[in-house]
Image (tube, rainbow, N blue to C red; front, top):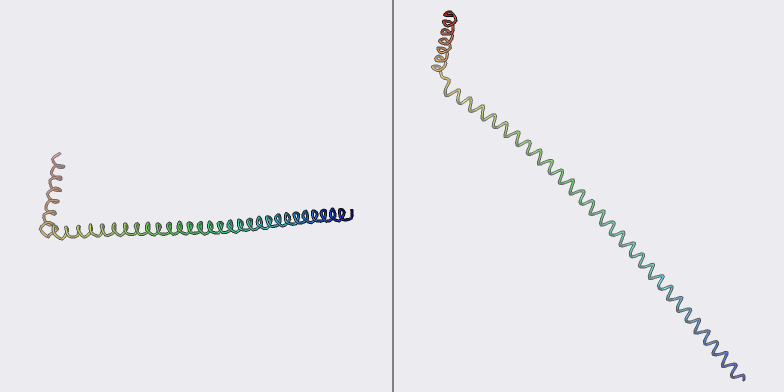
Length: 133
């Protein structure tokens, strides 16, 4: 009977030890899962921070490119305006040169005296018409 009691006690002890071992293993598994979950959360937070930084960098790059494009376009407009103004001035200068050339070619002393004679004829004929009425 003592052996039976000893055997029962050993079985209960063994059963209790097995249950404690199972509990300990379960607690370790739960702690391990918690640690893995926390590591995953940390990785997610790091990745989100990296993504946010990349987006900010991309936004800054786009903003810079937009400003640069506007600046270059402004310079092009100024250059076009300036070259247009210069072309206009050159065309006016060319026109003046052509007028001066024509004056030099056609307005000679004989032409001036012919114009004076024509003016005198027109004035005299107008005067005679006025008198005739």
